[in-house]
Length: 318
Image (cartoon, rainbow, N blue to C red; front, side, top):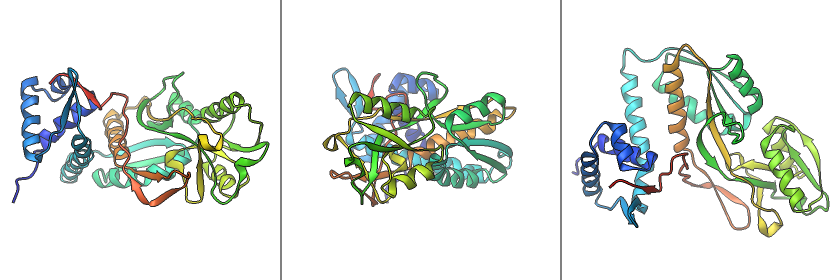
């Protein structure tokens, strides 16, 4: 029987992917660069596949390296979860977290289940509001942490996941073919709404806002009923929706960036633990595979590797 993988090697491998550099990874794991290089050679020997490939003077993750990364993250997370379960000094207390309801619907079940198993003595208090409201709560000290839509102009949060922002319509209606497009958007402060309206104006497409709400449930209902089209991140797609693209006359939207915003707290240990847990959990959440005709199959989930703020495709220092 083959020997198990070395968790220290996997942790170093993940750090290389996250920092984009063997040199920076060595600093993070408190090893010399030569020791990190040796770890990666041994990991490649253990896997039996090359994990890196040359691109000029740089190294990047090979196809097998990209494949290993998802497994490595899950193994390290499970290791932490296991150790936490037997730690008599494990975290306890109350932490207040906020998120928009569309993220809550898609991400919170995974996040809460895993975090509660690792930290059964921590009580989570959750509120659902749009990002501007959550930012205000953070400012006033009403929240310890918020999972929000990142705004580049404000730079309020640390980006932990990136997804395409998509035009969506009902798969059972031709709403997008109407001469004046009926739209369902968030409130005027919504950055997705502003991006969509700017693009529609550039495209010289006539439209009118038929529904306006901070509730993702309302927007989803308007789309599925064929009353309006909208823009949603990939994670918010639902059965019965159709993604509209250039073939339908709709240009590409900016990507959706999901970030973590931290408040001032007397329990930074709890906030750090939950923030790390959210980032790791989002790594393991898949999205539906979108087909060429704009429909998608929820039975065939495509693994979505998170694009972090630090590049993990091109690596230096080896």
